[in-house]
Image 1 (cartoon, rainbow, N blue to C red):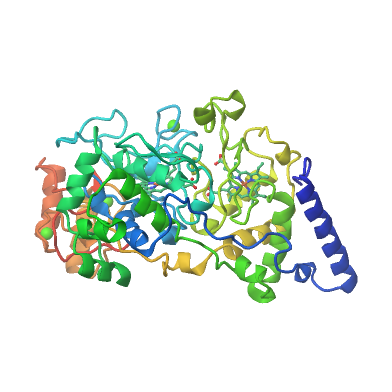
Image 2: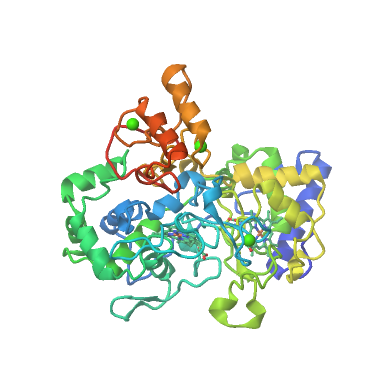
Length: 511
Ligand code: HEC
Ligand code: HEC
Ligand SMILES: [Ca+2]
Ligand SMILES: [Ca+2]
Ligand SMILES: [Ca+2]
């Protein structure tokens, strides 16, 4: 059990828990039924907001447009939401793809230190042509860490796995400090837009971003827009109109982009999990197994995943990888003590956002629990993890039930307001009919089966090898020509690279 070094608060909790359990035995009712509202954690408090950027409906609306705007990326492929989808718990759903692997510290693919990251953009000169990044070219670059959740992120005083964003927000265009504290969301939001890995190009500047937003129709590439965005578009027509509505004049600046996106993110409050409902006094909101899981969580996990958001944001080395591979918080603090330490994330909606940890190294919650049960993969330096938990399987499954089901807000899982959003463009490889990531003879066969013997396909755009918007015999012929007579590469995104369809047609891909 992780209970050496308990804070007084946790000691009190353990004491309370012991009483609850003993009382439960005496009354021979399930122990869990004895936990009452707020016994273990207070309810989620209001979302904090800095006085310099008070939340308004108008700013949050603009922020919602910008967050889901694929045209905010240099190559029109990627929005914030591409890597932070509600249904994936606010993280990146594109994880089963071989193309989302970063080679990690050793620079080699296929070794133990590989990271399950997020697919960004092909490195590109802002003037136009693709550049060789030395690792991924001609493929899209991949981030060196697992995407985190944007849902409830505003509860953390600093952001990113290493804590490098916030609390101070400096205007990247003027160098002025606009928010001295509580501005982590604003500080974070300006990063990805300029990043040459995530959304930008080699030397992207805010003038370029501004010109781009002025020239596009909001969300022109997205589909299935929620009602509030459709209405916003009808009323305000373009980004200048939306900025005017949010800020009083139509000027587009980096700081305003940050203020709007942060405002939108502050509306993403995941406070309707079964745990929250239970915590408000509705005792059957969590099953008995989940309630027992909550008790185990309180005893073993709460010291680091404390605060009502279930992640205290403190930095710890818990032994996920050897500390030298990714120095973590050391890069921010410069303190040797912080080498290999990462932020304790919020665990709300954690069941939706596998794989886990900063490197995406654990595929399932079972793997995470086995990790904690054995005391970490690389000897952690945190006294709270020593000795290892060593829980029996029945208790591990209760803990998992609590994490997986007790902490999932159904509005997040099903993309309901305020977590609703437009559909982003599907990524595919041209000619890859069987969607296994590579184009080979089996794709031509799958296309022929689809055309002539009732075979099923899941991505019409990939099957449309010649990108003429129609599915016919010319498509498998194009694939065979490419494979066997060295014909020119298939149309963008190409037969060796992954991306959205640059041409408008009626074809679709399933997720
Ligand atoms: C290409 C994928 C990608 C894109 C695009 C992207 N992010 Fe992220 N995001 C990540 C990754 C990866 C991390 C973790 C990075 C790290 O810690 O080093 C992250 C971290 C974050 C966090 C920190 C959460 C926390 O708890 O600390 C926030 C907030 C966030 N992103 C918001 C945004 C916003 C807003 C945008 C658009 C302006 C955006 N992201 C665009 C991949 C992406
Ligand atoms: C000593 C502090 C500490 C304790 C105790 C602790 N955690 Fe964590 N937890 C962390 C840190 C730090 C991370 C991020 C580590 C990393 O990625 O390197 C983390 C990450 C996680 C993640 C991955 C979340 C994600 O988004 O990837 C899960 C799940 C998790 N913890 C569950 C638990 C459970 C369940 C327990 C109790 C059995 C527990 N933790 C106990 C500090 C702790
Ligand atoms: Ca590697
Ligand atoms: Ca294929
Ligand atoms: Ca075709």
